[in-house]
Image (cartoon, rainbow, N blue to C red; front, side, top):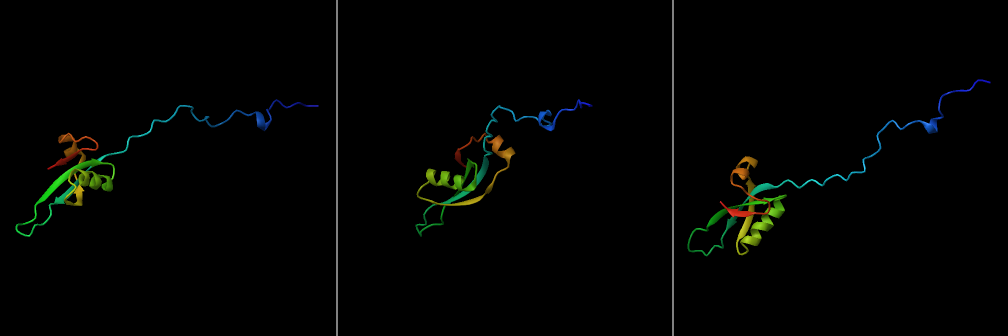
Length: 100
């Protein structure tokens, strides 16, 4: 009788690499500089004051909430974003709210 030198299918080496046991580092969420328009309460005697704040946040709702926390008596509205380059030049930090 002739014997085969080939291994049975169950003894073959795995072709794919086994998953690494290292834990993957969690990525930090990307922060964006959102601009938020803030208008003071209208007293009827003068034109309503309008100010613009910038908030570094991960999403627009967080930016509006951060500005609302800084200026609770005013009406706030999301108005846009700043470029990453401009935010870096202003040295804005995550979570920071600043009037511009």
